[in-house]
Amino acid sequence: HAAAAAAAPPQPPSGARERSFSEAIAEAHAVALRSDPRVVVMGEDIGEMGGVFQCTAGLTSEFGARRVIETPISEACIGGCAVGAAATGLVVPIVEVQIMDMVTLMMDNVVNQAAKWRLMLGGEAQRDAEGRSVSMPIVIRGPQGGGHRLSAQHSQSLEAWFTAVPGLKVVMPSTPHDAKGLLLAAVRDPNPVIFLEHKNLYQLPRSHVPDGDYEVPLGVASILREGTDVTLVATSNMVHEALKAASRLAARKEQPVSVEVIDPRTLWPLDEATILDSVQRTSRLVIAHEAPRRGGWGGELLSVVQEKAFDYLDAPITIVAGRDCPLPYNAALEKACIPGAAQIAEACLAVVQRPGFDQ
Image (cartoon, rainbow, N blue to C red; front, side, top):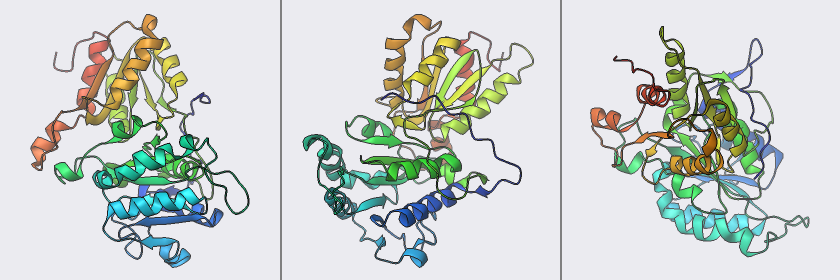
């Protein structure tokens, strides 16, 4: 997938309109429902309750129960209904999985049906009532990640599962602005899209989100901070930890480190060009994600850069990732399993071969 040039972070105008992450997601739902009568939202407790994290708040009052569909507590049922509906071309489902760990119960429909539908049928699949060629227009979105003492079965980061399945697109926004624009782009994509939202992002301070309809294109990374010494690619909530680490490194009185922070925003399609261009300029790469290192998405990015930019590297590529264990309920143990700004900063120092903060 050839991507456009990496986008710079949007600069909010004076008196900017601000929304929380949840509010941005809810707005994207509303815009999608207004702009396309085929769109429906499906999930548990998404009606009057507005979803556990309020990402569907206010939708039922405007669009009614026929388009904001309360489902049984059965992810297998939700997945089957949504994939079947999308296959007709008459419905564009946005599925909220209340806790993304429970997507395990709909994986047959996601992996064996949705991901393969378009390719098995030559890209045509069905045609809708107006004769338009469609494929598998479905978005499966919901919260993932740890840090809230929800224990091992409600705290996983499962993005690597989905990036390993050809036919799926995988989105991981890190800001309210990107969440709204990426969700609208995902809804209008003819392919199945997995849209992963870290729980910590719902607690971000409100920030600039434009009114109305706009899209952030899939497959375009965002350079959030420019730098010259090391490229730091971080996903989802780790983007904010990466920015903290970069600020801390730049503020060192002796031997400060200039870090370029990149948010890929979509893990597939991946904006390889932006990341490779940055690595060619800095000659070093650190990758940060919350999911365990073993089998994690960072290994995929490492292989891409190793193959395509090896001659530019002046240090081994480093991955900062979660521990290879189920997340504990105990707060101290859970914290010890999830990387943060301190670990990211130390990794950046190591690749530029400069003393750590304790030296």
